[in-house]
Image: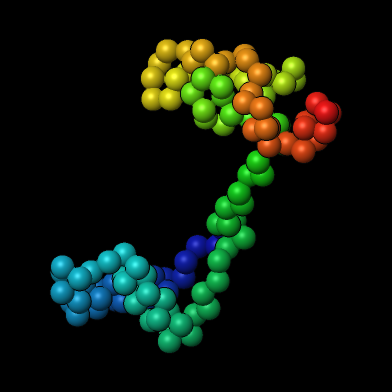
Length: 118
């Protein structure tokens, strides 16, 4: 990772201080200070671009078939046998009576699983 050049740090500090001096305290926002810093960096000749390391990629959803619990109605992953996985009642610590039971008919979200069940 490349360290930020001292001159760029000086521009950042000055832009943040200018923002605090110019903007009334009740109107300051993190986005406002960031915009001021970006504007000052660009006007000072720096290029602003995201680092490839800073990009967070969303994890793809599991291809595991899902279905609605017949007891609590929430969507859960299914076991290999096509039953609702073990889970607790929503917002509670005790097990849901719909665990390990077949999902609500027609609620299975995986086409592959629905086709194999037919």
